[in-house]
Length: 411
Image (cartoon, rainbow, N blue to C red; front, side, top):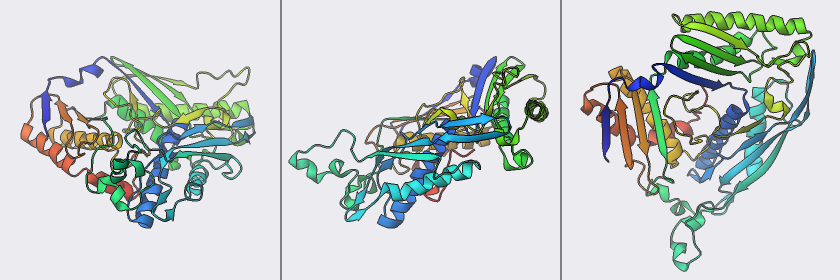
């Protein structure tokens, strides 16, 4: 394994003069798709580990949410057409003589997920699940006589544990890149903390009208920071236009107070619900607090990156890591590992760092094809190299933490 360490002074030049940072809140359809898909993968992994003794092959990373329809007016809102969950991807439906029924296994998880996310939603009536799960293997299997001695033909229908090649050879399933960096900039940190604050249980305790599909975009040019927020209100708790505007004024004050403390020394401008037309009463009011109720759609991989943000000036992979197999999926494991390594290096060196890990299909996960660390200024390379090597050799610790129920996407 070759590890390259590149030391470049002022490595953060990409955000010196400007930066753009976005966060899709916990109720945004893309965030919902990522979190739900990952929960399904965690549940399936833990279930098959307990039932069959091994984590069976699966990936639900093509899951999609198709928006329903709703009827809203001041003081009243309800869903009129169900939200559709396209359960898409691949999974093993059999292990030897053991049959696995995806409907029985995962449908309750999906309904429970939405029930916990939205108080005003009836998961039996308002959620329509469409099962599109396949058992087709990726290219590699053939029906030549010799292939019966391999594992590709039985990838999603293993006869026994011997058909799970990763138990003897933990190789990457794909050629993929994982990227991590640390630390967050002041603006990145502020955007993340702001959405978490607005959507936390404590802040919402006396604001039942506040929806969860909050979206934030920050643009910094020099010392000037402009922030635009879209904040939904729930119709059943907002009975007049005066209440709606009063709620916005209240939340604007809280936003300003928090950002002033987080972005002290920067010139701050806040824009809130810019598409509202008060005269026409075109307002951001919803039945359950998310645009998923009214035609918007969510797709795995289109939302926040692993660190909870979409930062256009930073390095990142477009890999949709949610719901990829936690045992051997390089697109998942290398992104998680790259971020962990970056955090550890920054903690020790206090210097901005970027980490890149590249897998090669079939190559051992503990032997990445490329591993590169780019850091701002000179460091003790032996220390950095040791952190990288230790992280790679202990990559299965990430799998273990996922099997214990850790959802890395919840931030």
